[in-house]
Amino acid sequence: MRPLRRALARVAVLATAALAGVLLLTVPAAAADAPPAPEVSSFTDETAGGVTLQQQGSRVTVPVALPRVYPYVYAGSAEPVGVGWLEPDGGVVRIDLALMPPGDIVVALLAEDGSLAGWAGTALAEADSHAPPPDAAASADDTESASPGVTGSAWPFVVGGIAVLAVATVAVLIGRRRRRDAGTDGAEPNGP
Image (cartoon, rainbow, N blue to C red; front, side, top):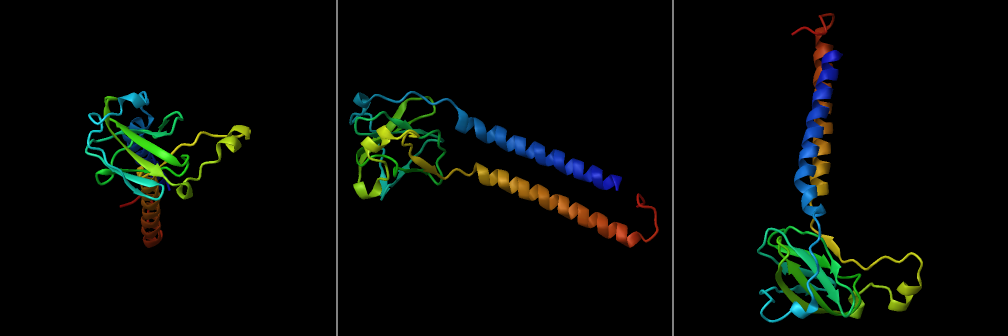
């Protein structure tokens, strides 16, 4: 039984090391400090940067050539909402604007160095907005800011995959050990 415990301990150590490696490689990108939001006055034809938005309902897809960007969403005269650091999936980032108020929307993309990489505008239809009316939000006790949702983050799937792999490895080791022990019939348990 001791070799089985050693094997399980080794698997646990390897799984923990792999999980720590994934978190060290993934979390800093998401947890990095947010760059300051650019001023609306900086949105000119020269700073548009060729950014385009492809909108379907409340979701916008933005083609991006940078390794990662920090989008800010501007709705009317409200404070800009930072989406967080995003790494493009297939050369695009996707942002759900459903919690933004209807009307004119500007999405500004900041590069890793915090500089304005570009911006583009669109309009969010009232039917696509699920933001509470301004007077309801002001009177509610438990209000939260309307933050756009982000899709495409894969790191939870990576962590889950590692956990499944660790459990499967332990199950295989236990199965092998039981088959080996069952086949010895009176032989030394720690024998060859």
